[in-house]
Image (cartoon, rainbow, N blue to C red; front, side):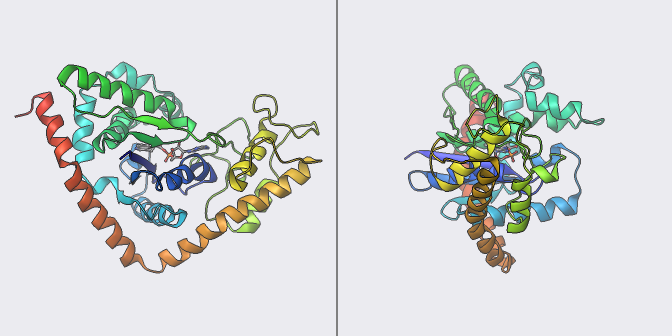
Length: 320
Ligand code: TYM
């Protein structure tokens, strides 16, 4: 059977970008493959954080992923399986400093901070460890993870070449539409949990009125032609992509006479797509003990199922 793995950082509230770029594809893969998903709480330590907030966010992200429909997978917290950090060290010893420094996300994030944590630089080694630990064939991710995915493949190939066949070389899968959801207020920038623009970011738990307001105020352009052209018309194209992804129709199919009509349709489609997520989240939040039970059972299972791979990697690299 095909094996699938992906993870979601616990840095902030999950966004519509996370949902369409990775969560929905991850939900769909459950029908055809053995899926394991994680909340990447260790990755949240790579930038300034507040311990109490991180703890709350981690639980929220886990409950939200279940609410989105990842309830037929193994879902656990990355930090509860020490094999991730152990394998990460072996991969840090496979990777080169130069290739880590070349990562676009590192360059962008480090430029925006005065104190750059060392773990921000080594971040892709931990991400590679996440994936390789599970011998994943497929990794559903958004477009912004492309460079990290290529590095993961490079590290797997290098390790295998040097120390013998140990890792499965994974393939990334990107969604056909909405692989890069843009900020509604700044449509040339990616919609992100940590972005400055609250007005341009739809969070999965936003009430319908907020979603409608954010989409109705989305920045478009001074023209009036509704056409899919991401380079020339980023705002309009972003709305068309959101509408297509949320309604399941092709991106070119809807015909709109005006930007206003397009916004209205898009807002309703997004609200409709997220309504069941909000409902299920409310149910799950009412029973925190059940969430703990699910996460603990999954971590135990992952620890057991990955011990063989970790042992093989340790042996291959020369640890006695
Ligand atoms: P993260 O937590 O930033 O985002 C989670 C997933 O959502 C996707 N995504 C988007 N897709 C489309 N449009 C957007 N605007 C958008 N914003 C985010 C991301 O591509 C990602 O798939 N390093 C990862 C977390 C991670 C991981 C892993 C992923 C840790 N270990 C192992 C895959 C496999 C990250 O920061 O994603």
